[in-house]
Image 1 (cartoon, each protein chain N blue to C red):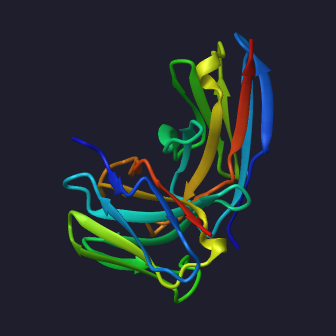
Image 2: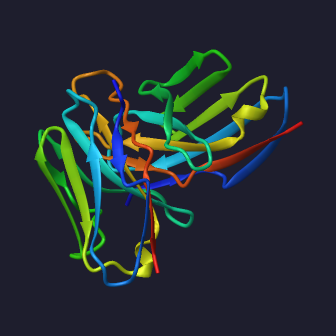
Length: 115
Length: 110
C-alpha cells in the first residue's frame, strides 16, 4: 500500500487567503484523523472521522477551520480565512478499528506558512 | 483535563542506554503508544502497552504502570540514527481519541 498521502507538501499563502489541505487514507482504514503540530503545543488532534462521519471536532480551534470526508478515500481540511498563527505542520493519519493496537499511520504532512 | 508530560530534550552517547519517561493524566485509558519522529518527517509507530509491564522489541523496550500513570521507553545500544523526537500518546477509553505529549528530542553523540 502507498500509505497515507497528503497534498500539498508545502503551502505558502498570505493572511486572509483560503487554504485547503488534502488527504487520502490507507485503503480499508475506517478512521481518519487530522492533527496540527507546532513546537510549542506538539501534536494536537483537530478532528477525527469514522466511516466518513465526524466523531469529535472538539480540537478544531475556531470556525475558520472546517473538515470534510466525502468518501472513504478522501478528506479535506480547510482554513478560511488563514492567519499567521495557523502556520504549522498538518498531519493526516488513519487506522483500522477492531485491531488490538489500532496503530495510527501518518502521512508526510503539509507544512503551512501564512505570511 | 488531559495532560501528558515528557522531558523536552535528552542527550546520550552512541552505544549507551537511554530512558525516556512519560507521565499522563487522562479521562480514561485504553493504551499507551510511543512514536518516533525524525526531523521533517511523519511520526512512525514504535511500541504499544495496554497492560502493566515491559514490552520488548529488539533494541527498544517500553514499560507501563497504569496505577502510577507512568511509562518509559528504553533504547539500548544507541545509534546515530536514533537521534529523533519520541512522542508518548494515550488513547482515551471508549473513543479513538489520542492525546500526544509534546515529545522528547533525543540527540545521540558520537
